[in-house]
Image (cartoon, rainbow, N blue to C red; front, top):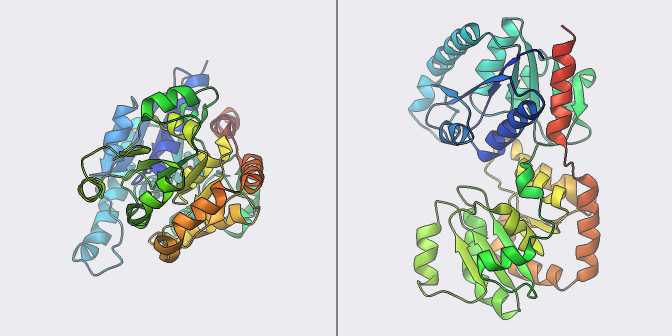
Length: 368
């Protein structure tokens, strides 16, 4: 069996890091002798998450452009040049058979250098609206793995392969776990439960909406599992009080997301690509509140790709504080609508995306 060498590059958020790890795990499952190297951005969360998953990572000094005025923007051209040169050095030393980009700051210089050096390259685009960097890189890479239809408006049609987004298998395996989930969260299996999740750092809009209305939801007979994220956890603890509230589980981060999904009757979430892919893979009815503070407003486009198929309910960020609680109550009390949304979400879900991406990589490497 050929021993391949693979570089995976990208990061910045869990939405880029976890797909990269899922792809590496998928390759390793089929080709256990493969040697991996991740390239990320210095100081970003991939520098912690990737080693925790058992892979080596090197950081580039790359940074993103700040939309608000910042002196660091004047240093950006130098950071880009430095990152390109460093990426070239890493690639030459490691001598990969293929370089896979998943988006994020480090992905641009790494893929650019791999293309210039004549190495096979693949992009994995998670969103329904491709970022500018991936659109530029897409002209040169060999294949582009996508998770949404109609992506030929961003990429050359002949390079596109529909694979879906790779999600962590342990998270979407939820069958038969509800009883264990109830014990874990100290909740009741017979009571309807809403899961609030806004990503690893949290979503202030979601947190403020639930902070103001959690009592209304509990009085409506619902239980709440609430991942607040890192940024708001302390203030939420202070405002809600130190005494436990029956039917409310609040945590900064939920590590056992399979149990949270198993317990949930409705998921309320931002519309990051991986969150949306997980929701579809488990077939749960969801209320999506896209973040407006992301490039090209791609979360709104992700959410609307589902709502166009009646596979989710859409709530605008600016309206969430006033309407989210009532939307949750209406959907929870409409069993027929929840069933329809669940079935439509399941139709859009892809559970073996990692295997399909491995097949794309395999086809490229076995051609040489």
